[in-house]
Amino acid sequence: MPKNRWPLGAYINEARGTMAMREAARRAGISETWWRAIESGTQKVGGVEVSVTVKPETVVIAARTVNADPSKALELADYDPADYQWLLDSPASKDESSVEDHKEWFAGLPREEREEVLAELQRLNVDIELTRGLGRRRSG
Image 1 (tube, rainbow, N blue to C red):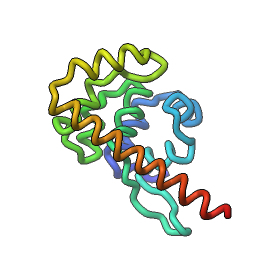
Image 2: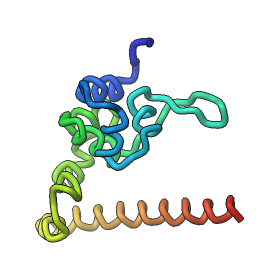
Image 3: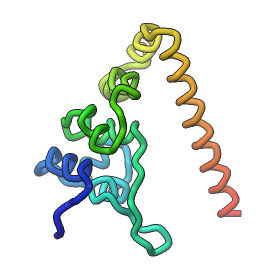
């Protein structure tokens, strides 16, 4: 197998160690196919191999899943960790924290950061709604 030239993929792969990709993907709550794309740095789109674009949230989830440094992972994915401090400071996962933990964390943020989080949640919700809408059109 050729050496991974995508720094994030190599970092996540090394941190994963002997954990199976399938298990890492399951723990992260993503598909094994997407986990493979994160590690390889590429995915097939219409039969053509293209570079992946991994959202900061997914970078942090993948890093935490394999006990890697999320801040370093963001840097390796060409994100500035300072821009995602709110994400780095958030509770690790729904398995490790309760809704009350999230509420407490959110309430402790300065107003400007709370607004950033709300804007990001709105953006994610729009993405979900668009995906659902496209799925309905395809199957109809």
